[in-house]
Length: 357
Ligand code: COI
Image (cartoon, rainbow, N blue to C red; front, side):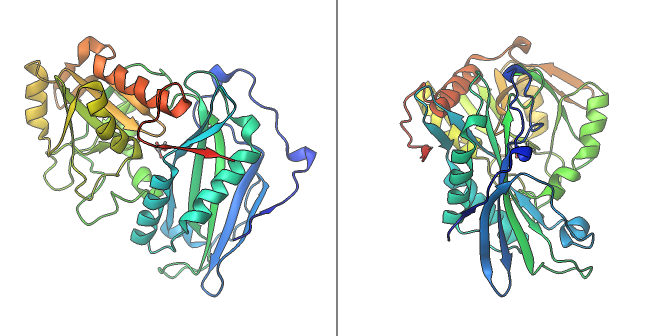
C-alpha cells in the first residue's frame, strides 16, 4: 500500500528538547504521525504520514466506551555512524496482531506496520536523541472508531503511530527500584486478556500501583489471578531472578505479556555465561530463597524499562533486599549487552537490528 506524505506546515513544527537529560518518558512528541484506516468494506486504506495533531472523534466511538484498543512499544536508535536502528520490530508486529486477534480487531499487515514505522522514523530522524540511555520510543496503536453504543467489534479502526524522544522510564534511571508483591488485586486471569497488549490491562492496574506508590514502592509485582501464589509480571516489565548463574523467569502461560526484551534476555543469557529456566515461581519459595541468599539478583525487562534492577522486594510483612540494594553483576552485563547491540556498540550476533532507510 502506498503511503502518502502530507506537507508539514511550519506552525506544526516544534522545538527539539535541548537538554536530553531532561527528556523523561513519553512527555514529548515529534512533528509527524502515521495514520491508516480500516473499514469493513474497504479493508486497509488511506495510509498517510501527516502533522502530529489531535483527532476529532465522535464521543460515541467504541474505544471510549468498551476499550477496544491495542498498542505496542519499540525503539529507534541513532548510531554513531548516523544509521538508524530498530530493535526486533518484526516481533512487535507479530505481537500486535496477536493482541488484535484477542480483541476482535483486524490484523495490520506486517509490511504496513513496518513500512509505516520506517518511513515515519526516517522523516523524523532529527528527533532521535543520542545521549546515553536515550532513544526514540515508537507507539503503534489501534483504536475502534465506529460511533455506536452496542457492544460489538467496530466496523472502523485507526491504526496510528506516534514517536516520543525518551530517557529512562523510571525517574531514578538505571538504579534499583523497590517492588511490592500485590496480594489483593489481580491483573489477569486464565482466559482473560493478560497476554494482549491492550489499554484495559493498564487501566485496571492503576489502583494497586497508586496504593503501592503511597507506601513508597515504585511498582507492584502481580501474582497469578487464581491462587495469588505464582509470580507473573510487573505491568511494564517481565521479571527475572538470578540464582547464581541461573536466571529464572515465569513461563508464558497466557496471562502475562510475551516481552520482546524478555525473549532477548533468554537468548543473551548464554553469552554472559548464564543458563535460563522458565518455571512457575511460588512467591513463598522465592521469598525464602532470597532470605537464604540463594537469589542473588532480580531485575525486570521491557522496551521502556530496558533492564531495570530491583533493590527490594516486599511481600506482606516481609521486606527483603537484593544484591545489597545495588545493581547486580548479571543485571549490569545484560543491560550492557542489550543496549550495546541496540546502539551499535556491540556486535549484533543475533540479527536483531533492522536499519531504517
Ligand atoms: C513498553 O515497554 O513499551 C510498554 O509498553 C510499557 C508501557 C506501559 C510503558
